Length: 203
Ligand SMILES: Nc1nc2c(ncn2[C@@H]2O[C@H](COP(=O)(O)OP(=O)(O)OP(=O)(O)O)[C@@H](O)[C@H]2O)c(=O)[nH]1
Image (cartoon, rainbow, N blue to C red; front, side, top):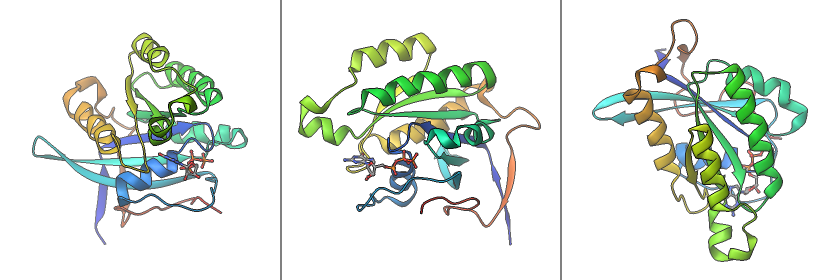
């Protein structure tokens, strides 16, 4: 049984049903699960190791439940995170309003956490432009204001999913201030590589 070290803790945040679990599934298992939507309960964890300039970096990704019922628990999961992927559904304007709540939380509680805004389900707006409810330029302005990176992804087609997590890993390597602060982020794991563990998840 070998221990595994997590370099960067990453937390997925956002309103329920925006597609956080699907993003992680696409990134880690290269698949898109069809079928009825199943909400996450609590949170699920997965680790994935990627290469950045020949250096191996292990991202420890916490996929939190979006339901407001679990909001207090989500706070536990973003503690010590080096990166937060704050998701919203491009076809649901209310989910973008919820982004502002999470950004405020992170800005006030986790100053070392870099924020990545992620507009999900881009396949839906590409196939039918009238379904877009969140204007790209509004999000771009907001991203600039809060100094966040911005991605539009599709877990169905895979569009920009690898790019999002690769950017997180690269930023982790490239920005000194983004490195783990002693005593906050490093976690030793046993047999958790590429598999969900802990308080899983769907029902
Ligand atoms: N077309 C399309 N549907 C998506 C995409 N991502 C997620 N979905 C669908 O949106 C629904 C919710 O996806 P989840 O990944 O479970 O959402 P979640 O944010 O993890 O939800 P919670 O666990 O409640 O917080 C599911 O029916 C998915 O199939 C996408 O990129 N394109």
